[in-house]
Length: 280
Ligand SMILES: NC(=O)c1ccc[n+]([C@@H]2O[C@H](COP(=O)([O-])OP(=O)(O)OC[C@H]3O[C@@H](n4cnc5c(N)ncnc54)[C@H](OP(=O)(O)O)[C@@H]3O)[C@@H](O)[C@H]2O)c1
Image (cartoon, rainbow, N blue to C red; front, side, top):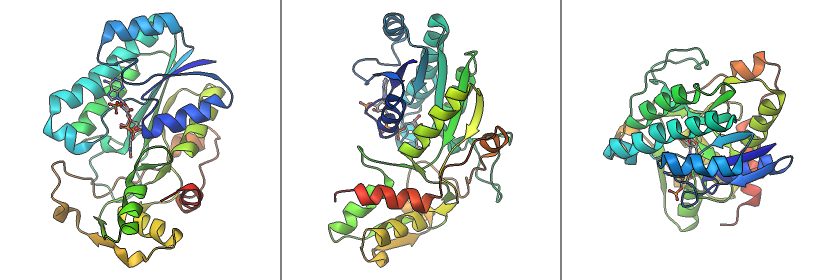
């Protein structure tokens, strides 16, 4: 297949490009090459490329930036996805849309399944939920909700903490935010497998097992040979961030299981693999 990937030099975009390049012709699209907020330019680019599939990873994933500037958050995350979906329909391409656990309200204390009611509490979550609806306008669509990505090529939650500790600082993280962690390459390969099997739909996707941000950062410190006591768990409320965070957003991968797909390995194994390649 010929596959155009938006956000191709972003954290997840890099993992998606690597995964799909193993078996397909990939056209990586950067922000400057293809601005998703410019509907006509994006559609022209797709008319030229004529992809069989668009994998849409471009977004503003920063909750605090979206909360501070809702117009910009909606322009990129929602309107941008409308433009990508329109272009996909125009050229008859399928669409893989990357979504998030932030579409939920965080009030449950058992894992969220794909059919659970949504109820985003942030601008980011609302813009991404509306983007899911836009993605559904494409006949062959896949929506993958991922959570706390880590992987090579761009600074992420795990690497940021390890760099702080390597510099002799403490890493303060929320001890009361429970969710999933996702290695970009594991998720990229699973998405390719689902797409190749032709199973369209909405999927939760992460490495197996739940963890708090504190557990994730502390395990990363241990695996890197640092003093885990340098990771300090504090209540999210003390972190004084603009956008509220979900206390609980663990996702059950019901759709993957019921379609007969194996689940990505546990997060601890994925984290160990990632850290073994990390140069601090
Ligand atoms: N990071 C996470 O933990 C996480 C968790 C759940 C879901 N997600 C979702 O995963 C996807 C990828 O996130 P990520 O972490 O890889 O984010 P990222 O590293 O910030 O990558 C996003 C990419 O989108 C590009 N972009 C922004 N505005 C654009 C525009 N108007 N036109 C074209 N490209 C544009 C950015 O380019 P510039 O930097 O040049 O602007 C960047 O390369 C997003 O859909 C996000 O909502 C991420």
